[in-house]
Amino acid sequence: MLVIDTDPGLDDAHALAMALVPSPACPRFPVAAVCTVAGNVGIDTVTGNARWLLGAFGGAAAETPVHRGAAGPIAGPGAHAAEIHGADGLGGLARWAVPDVPERDTPAALALIEAARRHPGEITLVALGPLTNIALALRLEPRLPELLDRVVVMGGAIHGRGNLTLNAEFNIGADPAAADLVFATFPRLTLVSWETTLAHAFSPAEFKGFFAGDGPAAGVLRRIVENRFVTDPGYARRSAYVRADPLAMAVALDPAVVKRTEHHRVRVGYGPGGLDHGLTVVDWRDTETDRPPVEIVLEADRDRLLALLQLA
Image 1 (tube, rainbow, N blue to C red):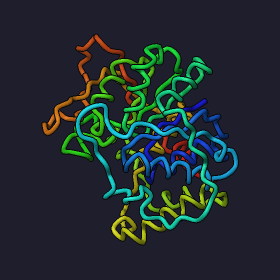
Image 2: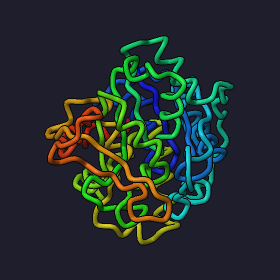
Image 3: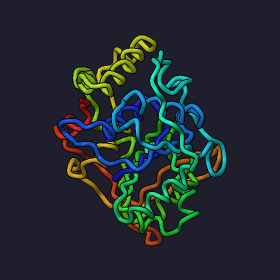
Image 4: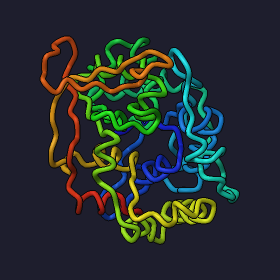
């Protein structure tokens, strides 16, 4: 069973479809909740995006509860990526009318806690945005690491190749205090980094093939991509495409897709305006002992990955 914490987001939309819509490669997992967090764009927008996307996917996706989460980081300045995802988070998509999934009253952090208490040892938490909601839930329920089966995080620049700053990856840099708390606390955490995402790029034909299916979810993603090709001609001319959040979702849905990992403790730097703000620091020499090691994904099975990213 999954809880998905997300800030939709172009590639978040793909990841949500992978989890919520059955495909030949992966039957649908039960999803206890979709939680939203400010990240790619603001909290009102990402929450609206989640509600619309699930409604547009239809079927069981339209019955999945959506919970609004944190509107900003625990401390310090936030970050947004409207220049990548568009002011609406979905690349300026001309949306069609669908019944939006209703927003539930319970805040995201509490919804995560409630799901973990209802299903102890059964929940895989998939974190596709800043880790604010998870840190807040942890402060409210210190037993959360024991209640969850697994945590999969998309984030971090394990070799300092940042996409938010010179050396900080966006999801971690958007709330480094929350990220450091999460890395310090959860004993069964799998990290899919930005560099690992870059190492698993896809050709234009492979990328377009992910959305070639006949189902509603493939149709939604196809229109999102086609719209982005029109509004960002440079994107249409790329020789390779990366899928950060879908890669993390593939790892969550099928742990066997992972071919190579290393286990090391991870810290996150915090210092607004400084080079260490949002810096993901991996203890490659294993000198630290005060926090659990993180499973860092380095390589995935490409054929299996291609199948998992394919929408029906």
